[in-house]
Image 1 (cartoon, rainbow, N blue to C red):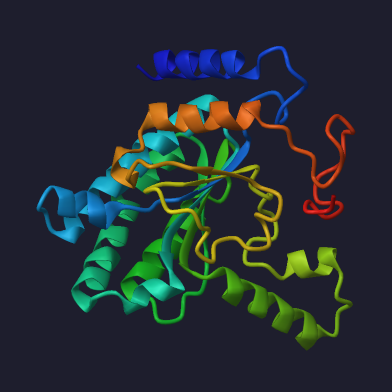
Image 2 (cartoon, helix red, strand yellow):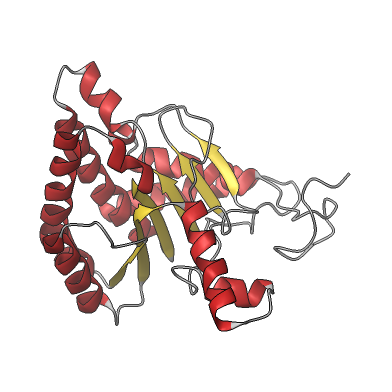
Length: 265
């Protein structure tokens, strides 16, 4: 089944490129980020508890990650729990903490077997000790894997990351350059996502990877996250392949990533 899905996805990407100028690298994105939104609404539409929506979302994440591995995607960064999510009802937060422990226990060994590295980004203060231990164990187990890196943004906020990076620079008296600043981010080795996907029809990035997504292509899907399956990922990648990435330069000029202002006329 996996090989058939991989063939179909690559066939769609070839068709998406067409005869026009080279699009976003002419191939599938290597580095993607996902805002997995809509678990609660998915549950409400089925008259289920919110926890059931989160559980369905966790199962879909596993399917999407396995598909990403089959496609050769090198990095996937998912927004699993933001610093703002602590304001949700206590019973929902508690259920999420328990689900994170369960998902680490059940899914990380499989990811490890498939050669994926798991890395959590965000603050760990205020996180239950049991979950912190699982996070540390998952990172230690998969540290040597190189096939793909899964970054899990947990207890994460983009503004908080930028403030922490600036504080790190100031504490060490370092010059404020982009290179020095990046070294103070939570995961300095993370590549800037080429494609940022958000589900559920919301048109915002919600304080996610504010530094890293400066030049990411944005893709918004009306599907709720538990419905965003392998075919939906293929559609997002095909749309990415049709786009022209200019990084502030002119079409066809071959500008390098990250240089210049995208909004300049």
